[in-house]
Image (tube, rainbow, N blue to C red):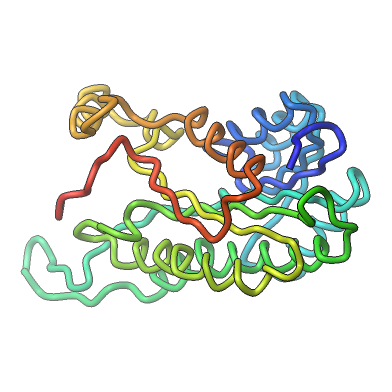
Length: 260
């Protein structure tokens, strides 16, 4: 896929972090970008800055996602590229104990369900609605009609203590990549997934610098946190390289997460 002004793209979670970095990288190539996010103020500001369109979207709602696509397509036409960056990070042990009484407590199922609902169900909801629009397009070079890039996490493969819900949600994204790519193989729509490691995000920015430095020191090479630019560079390559399909790629500086 040649990324230029002929291509419309949707980036979920595009108001900040990895999504913002990707939206900006695509816009720099001339791509018409629609940002899906719940943060209206930041989303509208980023969209204005890159000449795109902002759509207030809750990825846990069929109607909200459909309305977002309707607005994006009215502005830019049918998207040929969708990048799923929307997600949340949560942490809680399967069984935890009260610090004072040591009374055991089961995992909060509402939190587990919310994590899976946003990270896994939300990703599939967006990609399925996007693919439905893509398959109606005329094919481009190599018969390609579109490309979808999802975001999992290295926690899908080596989740840490307290990451049962998060790892399950991201593991689901990881596991569905190949079957979804196979579902869409005769339609000319590619599907790939990026598994980021320890990345510099707005949440990370709020941590003490010593904590950030300690996390960076854990990474084999390069000894720094991953950046939105690192993620965007890989996303751009996955969009442009038509022969990469059904693949899950770690973007992690060779780190393998310890139990804690």
